[in-house]
Image 1 (spheres, each protein chain N blue to C red):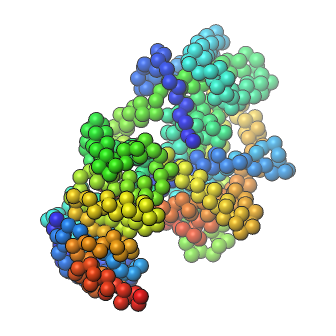
Image 2: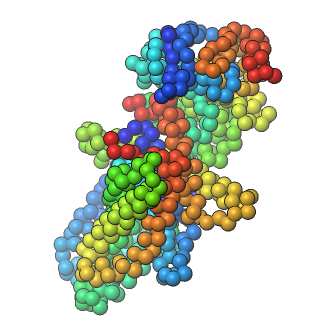
Image 3: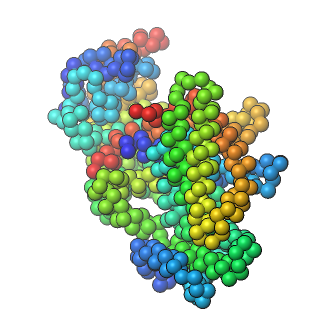
Length: 226
Length: 201
Length: 188
């Protein structure tokens, strides 16, 4: 993985979401922490090309998120804060197959890949279930399976264990830790990123700390005043 | 919650391609509209009814499905006896019955997936002209079925929110809030679809 | 259409289906005609998501009816509904939503005085949701059953009071949505 931000900034109308910054990311597990509204989600969406930089450039494995937007999407997958909004077909299996077909796979191959994706996270039983009826933890796992099925190299998570009970939290945390893919995780759940390779702390649209988890968490606590 | 009107079976109609069945309705419909012959209409209506009722649908269910349409046809037929003439009323009533029975038979013998395949195929010319993308139609249909239960849940939620605050619940007055609750997810859903690269090809 | 347009069209189509399942209300004075919420969707779709998307939402609903999903009020669906004597009204929904949207897009803007917004939505609902829908409905009714036009028109008048009430309700809902989450495409 090689993500490069060069003099990158993001402005929404008059509001500056991210002040200009340059950064290279290559670690396997990267955590992003910070207060609400500090620019974490905007930063994550920049990587996927869902937010375009107002100035500067972002490249993912050499692909520009503006010029090669489609190619970037197949390299980096995004699991949204609310996975219910991400699963767009009535049944879990249908959803995964639909995504794979949209990436050009034939029906039989898509079906096989979808089964493999479910098996990978131990949620084969969710295949025929209706998305509407899934619990929070099931939704999160189904979304991870659905996004990883298309084979991205990088998975970006926006608060994956937010609102999960302890049991489901553990399932999702284990799934994230076991991923062979690179993972970039926004989290308010600090223990989740404790053993990550690198953690960025965001504050008011700037990266105010970049380093190891323990020091990053300490810095974040100082900002939050607790 | 939303069960298709398709009925499992292996009749002659089940085995035909959806495109052929739709063409049949069209051709029969057009043919019946160019003739005013009572005999032709009567024969057509009897044959169509025979086809429909010979499908593996319990008789009561078969009637139940068509009740609203049959009721309208009957009322209009009765009115027309008085407005026009018994002969004319009978011709138009039999014609409508024939077309409606035939259409109901096609609906009962064609799977949703098969219909969708035909629709995708039929949209190809429009796709070439850049009017609509066939894949988008499938996407939109999936989205409706996916989010229908969520909207019902929003509706129940609004009902409970009213009850919790001791406010009388008026379904139609809740329309505004229900629509806002539903549509405000649109940005996030659209973002997610784009993030998954679903409309990429 | 952008992805967001497709999502709005689909969500609105789903709302139209949900409307069909809401309990119909009866107004004491005109108890003969129960007011089903579903046909209000024409007015709501045009006023809330605009002409193109509103019409597209109805095309999607009709597509669902055609492929055999019982999504119309009272659990109706299937090709028979689209071939029956009242099919013209269903086709009219598409054009009605479009015309409602056209008028609403031109008359209503965010930040106008409230009264003007109410008037704009009401007029759009009456013209698109009633006049246009009736025009298509009556035309097909006359053609398919042979009923003389004048008589069909008179028969249709029984539905006018109910539909005017729907226009009022749709106006209120559309204005509530405009205030809370505006998305009516402004005339570019």
